[in-house]
Image 1 (cartoon, rainbow, N blue to C red):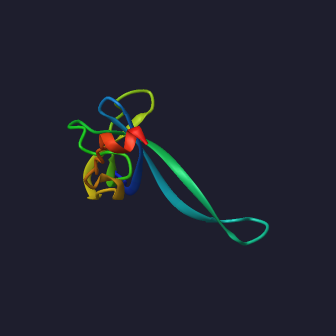
Image 2: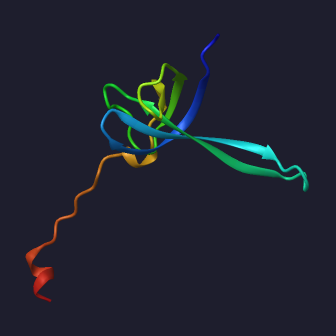
Length: 98
């Protein structure tokens, strides 16, 4: 049986070698007929810990690694916007005394 491949956004990178990835989707409401936004949350194994919060990643279904972890990271499709360089501002001593 072929393994599923999905693309989603990393929402948490606080666990060791595990990332939480949300896969957004649109579902048609049964009564009203409008499309509703839903999301699927997957726990993904990231051996090298290269994906960070905000990255768009491609994941593939794998054997169960733990009770909840059933996906593996294939590649990072796009880095998140907040990964740019951090600007450090320095406070001068004159501004502190005023």
